[in-house]
Amino acid sequence: MEKISEKEKKRDLKEEDKKEEVSKQEEVRTKRRRSKSKKRREKKHVRTEKCTIPPTLEEIDERIKGSYLETMNFASFKPLTEIEGRIQCPKCKSNRKFYCYACYVPLARDVPQLKLPVNFTVLKHPGEKMGKSSIIASKIIAPDNVTIHNSLEISEFDYDSTILLFPKEDSVPITSMPKETLESVKNVVLIDSTWLQVNKFLQNENVSKLKTVVINTEKTIFWRYQRGVTDKNLSTIEAMYFFMRDYDKVMSEKDYDGKYDNLLYFYAYTYALIQNEYKKGLKKDKEFKTIKGYVKEKSEEDNKEGSG
Image 1 (cartoon, helix red, strand yellow):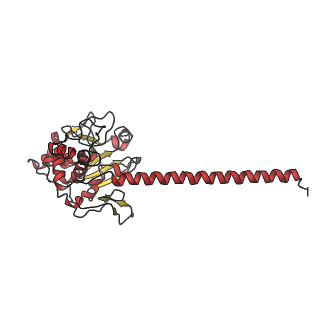
Image 2: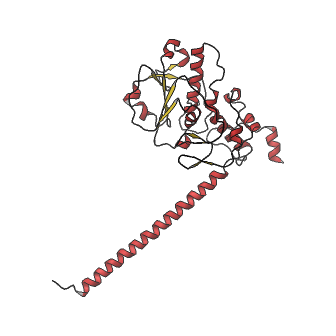
Image 3: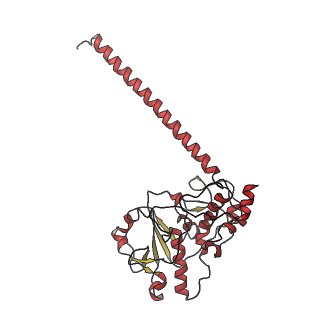
């Protein structure tokens, strides 16, 4: 066996020292990263907790004036105004506000429930946050009639009874469809993604086979701005609601009586909440910059309160 020289021993010791030093440095960097990440989370949490001041029932009525929500027959918003802070989801144990968007569990009491005459399949882009989706609330309001598919992989549909609600060039307005044709519709497909990513669904061969219908008479009041999108591009929950309204008109051959208005129950509350924040809440001195004129002009009463 060859003897190890002193030089080799020293070299090996130096290498071990270097490895140990590198390991210590990496450990220090890891701790710093974790510390920064924790501080960011804590900072973000603080912003989240103080970013809203819930509107009262009277303020909700005031804030939705001037929008299409004003004439709707909503259930009482009292269960939402009574909630303070967040509630733990009984399934995933996460703290949410009015419902758990991951488990589709209502957390507020007395949330309105609907039974729809057709089912909806929502194709949701998996890369987008569930908490920012307008359509999740429909699963809380009409749990038996809404399925949310959170993947880009899509199976075949029953093409005789399924339609796609989307504004394509060859889409047909629902109100122009014969009652006999609409009677055969059992399932409506909706795409829930940004308008920039929607082609990932439209190019899917199973989706491209679907007949398409459109809502072309309404303007959105959605608060999330997207570049290159007009006010004719409805949010997903708005599209569902207006489909049900027009479907009811065709099928009943009568004026719509408001029976599906509660599909927009959470949507209306959030709309009022945002309007309230920019008029009376923590953002009362700021402008809603992303959409010009989105927040309604301050009333004389608001101006008096602000100057007092």
